[in-house]
Length: 166
Image 1 (cartoon, rainbow, N blue to C red):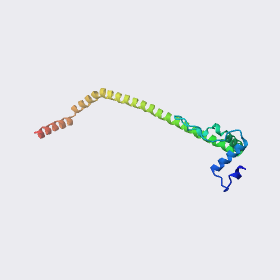
Image 2 (cartoon, rainbow, N blue to C red):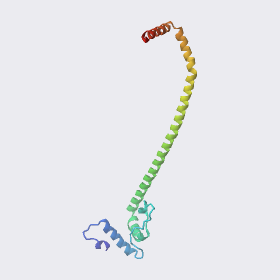
Image 3 (cartoon, rainbow, N blue to C red):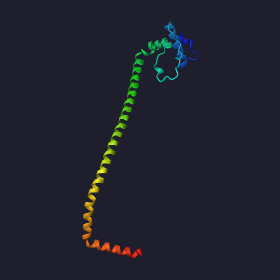
Image 4 (cartoon, one colour):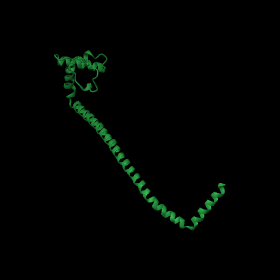
């Protein structure tokens, strides 16, 4: 009967489908309200998940949809499959975020350990060079002083420097 009243062009758009559901709800549950006006909004409150809430004015419509559509085995299995997929995707996003946060923290900790170790190695190398430099230099200086070719080369470079400096 409800479909016959709204069946002018044999086309069923969303508004007509909604009015048919309202008619069915008013026939099956005459004592329950059917008004579907949205609840009043309160400033400062987040309404991100209000589409999943059932508001008191929509109880009759809610019962009609559950009784006539959702309890059909195909629709019910499809709805549960979709709900499971949504839960899995949400859990995947949460796990990915946790993994990313842990990776960033681990990177910072390893970077701090690396910088500390590198600075310690640089300081140790500096002191080792400071200790070993005189020992190695005196050995090289003594070897160069004993070398006749080095003595001649040094004397020639001094003479050339003296000649060209005047």
